[in-house]
View 1 (spheres, helix red, strand yellow):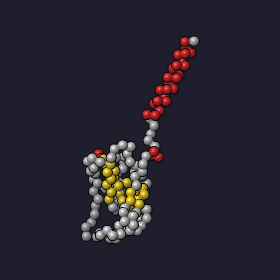
View 2 (cartoon, helix red, strand yellow):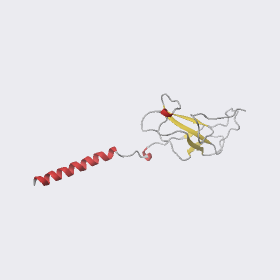
View 3 (cartoon, one colour):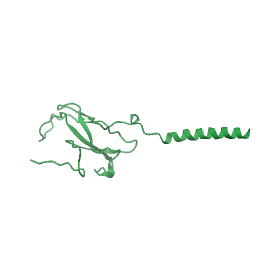
View 4 (spheres, helix red, strand yellow):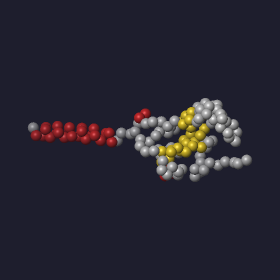
Length: 135
C-alpha cells in the first residue's frame, strides 16, 4: 500500500514539475509583440536639392539600437535589426508608409530604443558607412 501512495505522489510531483518548467521554455510569439511602423510626413513642400520630392518604389535601410548610447555599433543593435530593408508602399509626395521587405522589426519586450534609417537602401554596408558620390 505504501508503494502505491509513494508512486502516486511521485507521479503528481513529476506532473507539477513538468508543468511549471514548460512555461520557462516557451518561445516569444511574434503575434504577441508590437510591429514597428515607419512612415514619412508630407514632403510636397520640403525644400531639397535631391532629384525630386517623391517616393516611388524606394527602399530605406533601418537599424534598431539601444536608446543609450544610441550610436550605430554592433554591440548596440537590438533583436538583430541591422540594415533591415523597408519599401515605400506608394509613390507620391504625401505621407508614405514603408513596409518590411522580408524581415519585420518588432519592439523589444522591455526597454527603449532608437531607430537609424538611411536612403537609398544598400544590401551590404562596411563598418556602417554608406558610400556616396558627391557631384
